[in-house]
Length: 209
Image (cartoon, rainbow, N blue to C red):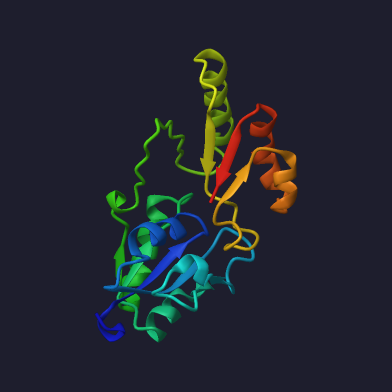
């Protein structure tokens, strides 16, 4: 399909779920052209690009990231067909207000089909989720780790989380933290260390990417 015939898409996000949705559902879809991401919640994300190392061969120059407050302008300037809403920590009312803005600007409003974004694993998984930041996912995850290691006797338990997107996104594609030196090597922020160090202290490995 030629570029002219591809569905023009904008993804609204907060440097987390939006990138995952793109990587799993849209990255290699030649019927869709992801024109841009918008960003909110996380500081200093807008004004950057999702790098070509991660965006794939359909996007050799990467994908620009704009502030969310330019939503209507981006829809009009880039002839956006559909907008995907791909972040959390907001109410149903907030999402519907965004939908109204998108529709009024002339684009369709969509939520990603979850079946397109789920990853298959050959290993047993305990998934820890929550409706918003601050519910206690980190503490619950560490509790689950302790139960698996100390009560059930599993020796090879690892944790996986998406990276905190403050640095070089391409360099954060796959990260493994088993020692404090790993955190130094990846130039982790204080916030990242607070998340990763408890696993290292317990003799576990945590992956991000």
